[in-house]
Image (tube, rainbow, N blue to C red; front, side, top):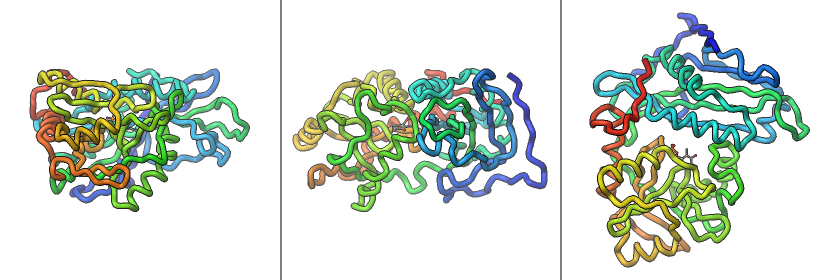
Length: 357
Ligand SMILES: *Cc1c(COP(=O)(O)O)cnc(C)c1O
């Protein structure tokens, strides 16, 4: 399929901000976006790159009422050598298709979607910020657009990609997060959509996150929905525990989002010869390990912050301080290595960087 490119007019063209150190994440978008539609009988068609603009949809469009959608989040970087790269983008498009299957959305040709993304970024290449720790965030999304309140399979869909510059990860250094274990709410049940990257999971988490914030915590630590016993993930990050010489992350059981950063941490750790274990880990084991001193670190992983140390854990009204509330050596080492690869500062034995141009 051909991609029709209609560049924004010179008068309308916005220049990238000079200083994005204080930019609010996801508030400022680049000049262009990618779009294509899907209709029954025609499949995907009208692939195009044009001026970033608002969408016009019927108020009865399925997405507004039944939340049928899939999204992704990844980043483009300018390396220290001045190359423009994406980090493991094929993984994001593979996961987008996995989510699409679960949400009854039409799948994409992954190679084509990657090509479309590269061509889109090429139009806005000056928007990839160059300062240390900055990047261009990429948000591919598929939505069901048919105007139909009757519950049915949508007959029309839209795929779009938008781009926004993001500021440095930790402008004032790592800021370990305070998390609270939610016993009241759960995020995802077996057989549900916990492993899909879809809007409803976020809508369903809002109240717990809001209450956590009101009580002074940054994020919620989710337990499994059946026994309320096993750790799943934290906010919109996967989670790791350093216990004795083992680095543990909950195994993927269908209710946990299979993070690409999670996979990168696992691969880097194994490459270093560390004991990286994917298994069930109960909140009781976590608390016991903190109390007997065998747990030295907790950290989250995700595209936004890469690695996010946990400084405090609250459970059943008790506060547990992890690593004196500071960043531990494993969190720092994983952060430095993965960020180092993303910016071309350290050797990439995994071939995780995909050139854009
Ligand atoms: C996106 C996401 C993650 C992290 O995935 P990455 O691919 O590492 O960015 C973790 N948990 C949830 C719920 C997510 O939506």
